[in-house]
Length: 306
Image (cartoon, rainbow, N blue to C red; front, side, top):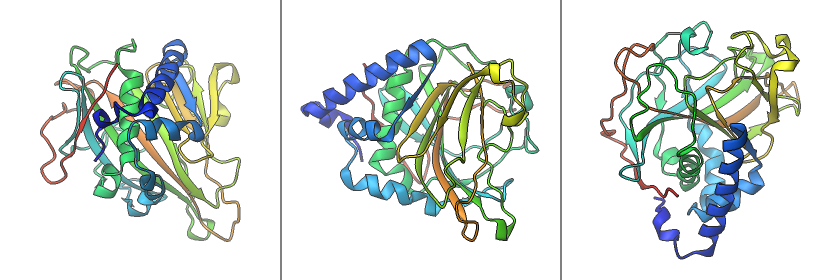
């Protein structure tokens, strides 16, 4: 288990903190940052991620389970509380996951309560994954954002929902992988982070992420969008390439996953981390957040904040 407080006597810890603070300054200026994987590695090591876990985190997507509404994706997920008052990150009990049209998410399963396979110990116990949660907490803490309806901005706690998602494309099986079938959308979050874990047989032009102006029409596909409303374009291509953005400042879209060799399946593995203030009673999704700890898979990490 990662204990960031044990790193305080390591020079690499302070180098990592300085790098995070530089990125945080950019995030304050533009509401989004894209960090190359090669630059993420020393940051995560400085926060305490173990060397061996950089290899094993690239294998956790093998443990993903069926998506209840998409046949080309496998998923695991977990709910966590980032608590600035107690300076800790804790695993929370499972709840359904729901996004609605009112949250700028327009798809065939909008408003449907979905349940996914829970994050295994190999995922949440990996110190690279834990360091990524710490990294995000440090970048977003104290960043002013435009509030979403139905969230409690008086709370010192953040609710983080972390998905490990593998997208599949296989023409022989009739699978056409869409990292964002919903087209232009938002995720009902305050801060969204996407991290590339790896791919196999992915055609190089696949899975480009676009950040769109909020005036762009929800639900249209990327090729239908107005180019003058595009605020950013990035592509996760290398291990640990990381995008972080203020979810309510932009809408976003992701293009399709294509096979490089059409005789073999293609896969793309990601961590997708949504962080927001807690839902209140009457939230548009129809339920509020619980803060009961997970009964079978506890996690409690010390949190360092500037």
